[in-house]
Image (tube, rainbow over the protein chains, first blue to last red):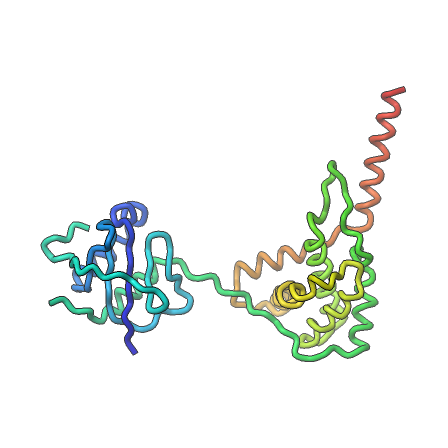
Length: 88
Length: 179
């Protein structure tokens, strides 16, 4: 059964500087045309996607990275990251 | 209009960016009441422990105190009793009950700490000990650290003797120097 999964990446520039692997993941998300928008702070990214429930062994929050399939609420700004404007 | 689509592989990749959650240590809970002879056998063994009489607050500024608090001493004595339970072959499902009944008779026992001892200390010690005995556990590193902590032997009665000797020799040196 698919659930809506919300991914939150705070302060993208700093996060990428700290964890270069995150840049690759964001690039892959863009290429997969995942739903992606700018967070209310204008510095982070929110991605919403469908997928199976997260494994119990996976952490939900680690530093500036967060992923949830329940419990939390994420704001939706509607400020989509458009293909021509993907500077993250 | 953009849509939210299935991106399972992306989700899997993102999860891999996060460190795994620490797996909680499985608690061993006694399901049976220990028989009187089991308790008696364990009691006799436990009475040989240095902390049995409840003397934990010893040591001095030079050598330090072996137990910063009575709770640490409680944990050390409980660990010793759990080890003794294993050595006198108390059945695993009776260990928790036997240990608390024996611990109740020690000088360290405090009624107000009974709940913590029953729900935290004893289950953690039993889990750690039976991991070492049978070599299986999900907790890995955490369990190993716990195991390492209970492997430390409690300070022996000779510790007190050494403290006294140290103090005596210092006093004698002071007396000589003042002379």
